[in-house]
Image 1 (cartoon, one colour):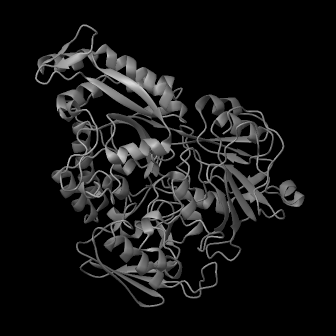
Image 2 (cartoon, one colour):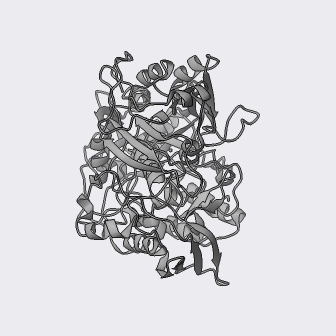
Image 3 (cartoon, one colour):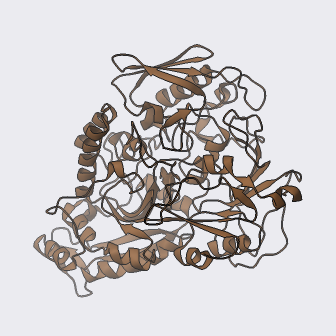
Length: 617
């Protein structure tokens, strides 16, 4: 799960019920001891204390990162051209307005005058032009977001308050290309220009990090915490809190204990049993959001580079579409929703989640792949995969067994639950799956090298699906030297790529949805990423410490809130009077085995994350 575009989860998406153009985000035990304070933390003022996404931070380098934790962080500390308003449509941020030429090939953004980076250097249109051009022309810089600028022909800054983007073809989603969390963060040229030569290894860990956003990153320890201080002059309104601390817990039970004791103010992405236990409790407000991401099984159908060079150690039998379809027919998605999600979610089919109904797609009745182990067995029988003495099928042509490695996230409870079911279901049809628990970093490292057979995965997305669709294009395959790209399952199909280009140039929302539906149909039939379910996002906030602002929108008739944005939620969260008068504090909840990680305000769109539903791996 590359919480991502959150993998595991790439991103907690921004709020949107209806969009115009585009459819336009622990402790080993729960025992808590004395609080610990991060070195250098300010002790005065009011502090918002939240649990970070389980995806964590892969790197503080925004050109390379795709875990949800990192993306949320960049959404908090770096500016973007646009924001997303409460209806999910592009709003002002660095840009106060934007216009297109009659041929729709030239976009002109008017950039705010007088803003300064956190070190006092003027923030101008040149910073945006330099950021986009670097991503556009440098393979390393384009690792995370290259697909978003692939149609850019030229980017210029005629003056300090004007940015001009010229595209090769009309690009319908351009106002979504640079938005908090799911889009491209703009970095200060005067800081980053000297690091381009060594960009692949640059860590960006000199604090405070020079940026501009609602918060400034003033402290970070990997797998411990991120500390941010409020930008009281932020152009979209100052945060109501003085500090923001994000803690990581290996087990959400420990985070729940910290919440109950008052050492945390907010937790996102609870387990269903935890959510139900907190519902109705004093000082606890529980929020159920419609799913903005999915959880799946990736299938290595043949890892390769952009030039077609085969790489990795994947089992070649997975290149057979019969084997992949049999795997898909062996998965009982509704049981996973019932047993793993406790009914708090939906069985999945389409590539894009239900938080964004404008992209809803379902397979035709003839193409729908339902749970049918008998049909899976017949497919394998007819293809010459006979069962051996131990019940595992063997390819009659090569003598290879249908025996595959199943990579799971060792720190993801849902992976452990799901993998047990998968092993049993696959065994029933004659396929052996051997579970290999890996850390998120190890799993993602193997993914990019192709050293895997089957992998558990999850992504989330925001209202514009371009990024999530883009990770399935041929352009995201790695180069021969291992650099560039952000592939998901080494999927590469010229018809899919052509449709990807077509949806980018389609300005009518209904027509664009039809094109994206055809893309989802192609991907569904390829069976390289069997999407199990869309989990509801389950959150809880303490009402005695947070008075309001943390949750946007209202619940619908089913009790679901719209997908939330950490960018806006943390910015608008308002402390309760008692907390404000007490002066807050920056203490961290500490417990046996507590591990704290950074994850910050930022919110919307790209389950680039690999991730849990929170990021992706």
